[in-house]
Length: 351
Image (cartoon, rainbow, N blue to C red; front, side):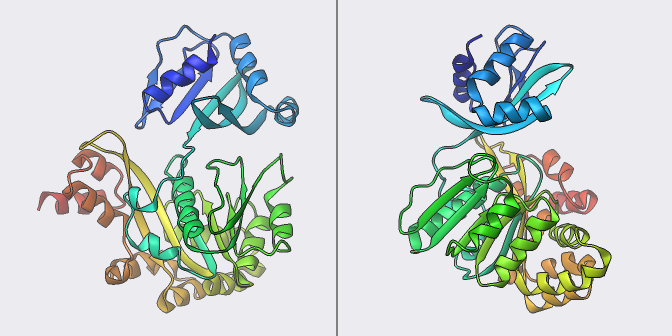
């Protein structure tokens, strides 16, 4: 089976993902829809052969030990991919996410202007959250690209795996990949603090140690960017606090209140006005009022604060969705289906 041909066909169709599973033809995701490709069913030997061809030695060894492995792969003349190899029904399966090689300009992503303002922050913690495939990595890459063009800074990225590759412009950028350049996020973050960084990108705050180190880095005067798989700003704060033992939660609320600068939560929508995707976003900016809510464990009030502070750039997801609908970018059905308060939004769209 011709792997290069499969990947080229997916690129030609503007697919975001390719799934290679034994017993099925290759499948691609195009603007959220899964589509079977015009190829024969893959055999277990086909998929195993793809893995052997793509994965570096360390990743293959990790796969044989753990039955799961993440790595990056560059298909010559096509694109780079973030690959997950796993077992299903006693056969190898591969999930491949296309990584755009060119960092997109922030202004081309359809995000509110306030996101650009976050790139001027000198320190603190900025979180971009959302589900898998919601565009978190793209938003963060565009923010790093903006700062790279503007500032003479030392930027360190810790990723699993490296997705967008940066060329140092005014800044010096170092990119480290889990497994290849570092054993764990926590270990790399601990040592990064001794490498004279100004800005640190942590691919994901996935455990307590990494989260604690990221908050410490933000406390000590660095700008730290990271992600979480959460669906709102309030949920993001609670997820971080819940990582800690109950006896430490008041302390971490105080630390988070002092360091958190913003939470941007994204959801991607299929466009109806042109091919492609557009993000709906919730934006929380950490004003003194928000910091008090975090300290006092009143995060359930955060949505109200967002609704009453639109003038300074905060935005609820439903407000963002309504704007996309009234601008003719997304369908009414998808707008309502993704809303936080579907019935309320449906009345608003019908008005």
